[in-house]
Image (cartoon, rainbow, N blue to C red; front, side, top):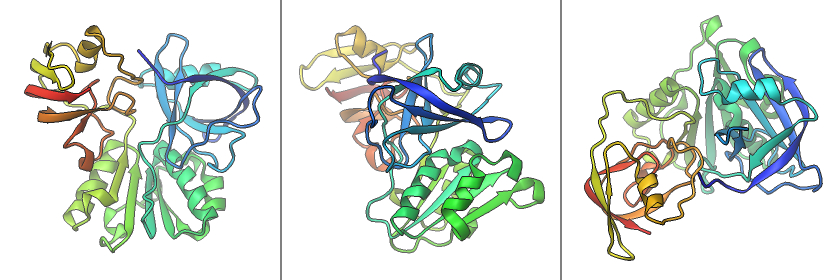
Length: 315
């Protein structure tokens, strides 16, 4: 695995904001400033066994002295959150990558509608901080079971004021995507959270005429499709004319590396965007959760995406 540059950051604060969510504040032990980042960005957290997990930055993008993460303990997850909760405390060291952003705010938007489900509110918290500081027009919808289980609730209330709408299902208040309204000019919607929420938001907004380029969704879980059966295919390298064969049980990313291409990667499950590459022609089976529809006609994630019969790669 070829990952991004990793920094050894010191944990200066580790606070449980709910029974399941740990809020970590990280600083560089020698430098006063960390690499800059934009709202919606995430970092890789490198675990001792070389696995990586992606977590959104939820602090203030204008404050480069620290990174803030909020990590929910997922007992049935892939192990990253359990390790974090058990091992990261004030004074410990976390191995963290430079930030990367696949979920940025639209520069041309005149209004932003943010929709966060549970821990999925973390990138939206950074967006809300930035938008509030710049005087932008926005609303944040927080969807969670109860106030006690809502990540970052006190600070979101302080940041957003009456622009925060809380939907607590334990009180009978469930978010209805219809409240987002019609696709008025210049309005962009952003959703992050459980797949059932993001799927519902995308379906509802599509049905009411929202253009795909104005609906932004972020996932940190791979596509779950038990019925998908990968098939072998060939990849033609446009720059050399070489053809490499990709067996059904091997990823395109792995085959490219076997053939001497130094391909960057991190998650290798289609959620981080590190291995993005271009393709010229062919029918690509997109299996990532990163690329927007507008980029899928000529970009792909070789860690999980495949092709039918053949694809020509821009490498």
